[in-house]
Length: 146
Image (cartoon, rainbow, N blue to C red; front, side, top):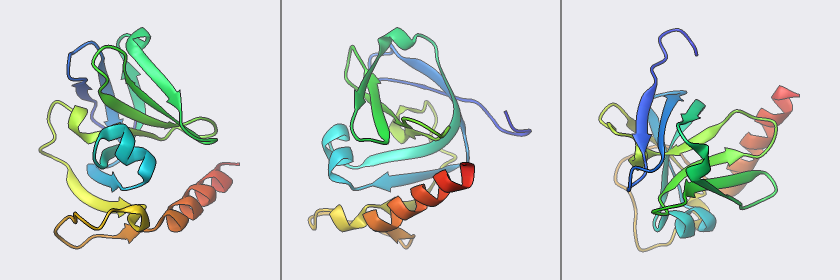
């Protein structure tokens, strides 16, 4: 854990899954992609984290949603919890709403804006990236780790 990094606690709706996570930054991102909208029942609001520790991993369900990522949820209540890279990275997007205290986070950016339905929009100015821009960023990050 990096000096000054704080472990934050969180969990699912029913309390069966409890975790601690170290945010990479105190920022929340929103994903509008079709998979995230179906998985979360809206938009997926996520906090980028490195270190995530789950108390009882047997309570987590996993769904491989693409060649590069999997989504994890509580097997009991179904709460969406983690989006993880399958290989080559320590990035875990932790569901913003699953943290016990969300008061210190700022809303940083929206991704897959080109897949956002027209019937809603978040107020305020922030970066809004298309799916192509996001995938280029992930590719650059992966190449930087090789």
